Length: 210
Image 1: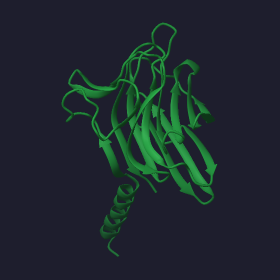
Image 2 (image 1 turned 90 degrees about the horizontal axis):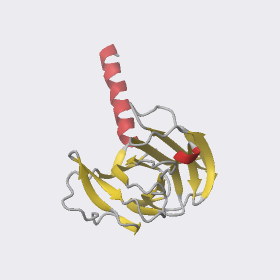
Image 3 (image 1 turned 30 degrees about the horizontal axis):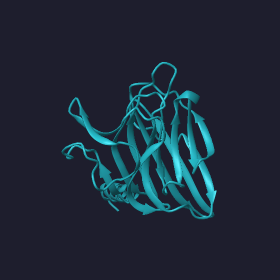
């Protein structure tokens, strides 16, 4: 076979594989949302979320009070074979730190949480912490989060990564496995404004993965 044809075929296979692993199921960057109302495609669990704008960038904002846990859900109901992504902006105030997370599989599903006061990223199922990894969060910067749940031979593999600057890391920062099937439900983002400062959410995505 002609070597150039071989290269082209290999490239086509790689492109097809990449497309299969990142099939978009949901995407919202709020750039086309007018007004401050939360779009109808979101299910607000609690909290006074509103669409805001700063410096030409629009985002979903959770106010800094009251001090509790608040979230919104979005995308299709899935239990596995999906990845959620988000950018989240938060700030500390004195010695008080916010906490925030992305999730898959509904309220009782898997969550990837940034816990700045602990200097950790945590992987949870419901309220139970399944794994942790060190993470040096920087106040006043956007944090990128990715969480995916994939089916494996005897259950599920849950993988998460987080970063604040530069390109997305190739390696997963934190992983865990789970026997059996995962809980079904929508993706979501949650904020705990314990610092008394607003938490902003942007570039929310749900994609299908192999």
